[in-house]
View 1 (cartoon, helix red, strand yellow):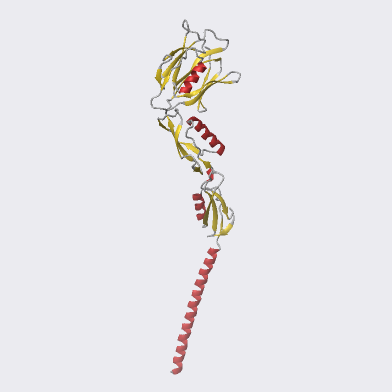
View 2: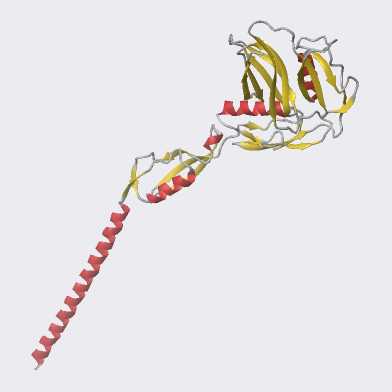
Length: 335
């Protein structure tokens, strides 16, 4: 009986040791598999995408898709239009790295190109031209003028910039909107109409332009006593010496020439333009059949119907422009 019990005891112990060994082996296998997959994941290889030139938001999405960690650095650049774009990256595009690797991105924060200049006291037409020239030189608009400009009465001549925002001296690092407050002149301005009968059309236009006056030319057959050949004023209204407000229309009549040369035409150029809050620079040129370009009229015009007499070779082309932009062409036909 005693030996049987010992055998049973030995058998039970053996089963326990076998079970323990099997459990230990199973745990070792599981742990080994876990370590294997952990090592395998750590060794996962990915290709670094090319994000140079991309906007930062897009670059971050591209790196996240590859399980790469961005590290962003900001730097000034040579162009305001680089602002927010990735300038450099490390590692370089196409590199094979482990997932989870840090990728350094150098992102442009723009550049301090200049300071806003002082436009106050300048004519708004000249300021527009300067802004267009600045945009051409920089490859894009740096200062974008808010249109329409704000207007106010002041003692400054009409069209003069009396306020600006941002103020002069403000640093700009990219495209910036600028606002002008422009003078309409005094609220009540009176001018004395000069003697214009007998003036050449060119001289009459020069005075009208200097005053920013509203005017209209008319053509008429010569009356007895008129001493005009189509290039001088023969009648005017209001009369010389009249005191009128600056927006009063001045009517000037030019006599039609009695004779014209061969292939020569006389006429009245007319074009309606929207009323401006202040006079803007316009020009009327004639392109002759020979190709020569001749400036006929250059003045500041308030708007409305612009008229100007001309005496030119047939088939000349009249070109009207405002702020250096062509707005009308017309071919001269026989009278």
